[in-house]
Length: 192
Image 1: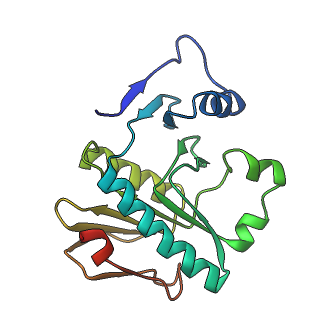
Image 2 (image 1 turned 45 degrees about the vertical axis):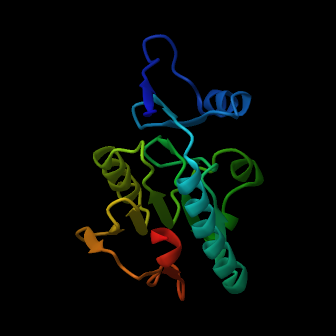
């Protein structure tokens, strides 16, 4: 099953509150919305991808509990990016000071903030081109560091603000660099 994109702009332009309500009323469906307002219906992941994503998110959560530098979010969290898109990366992290600057109401719905870090884990239904476009969108919206991990090809693309994309083949670990100080993702949990 592939993602479906629906353009309702000729019928209705959903406000942020209406889009949030649509997502809440249909919680079994994962929605994203691009900068043009088109709604993207994302298929659920399979067992292998879901398990791998859970393991990765756990490593981020353990690191974050130890450092207390920010907030970690899983794939069910939507973020309202500065360009108007609503995206749900597989893993996201926001520096504590930036999170604390949001109001309680902003934190409750889809926070209007680009994460400092995002990770996208390719699933069998994802296309590389569409996922790379999403990664570029994250960078254009001031995400500082992002990783695109493709388990099938054992390839990682690292995106950094103001730099060319770095491609790694079968790395054994990934460093959080200065964005996630001290964080290292051991890739054996990804490669299996």
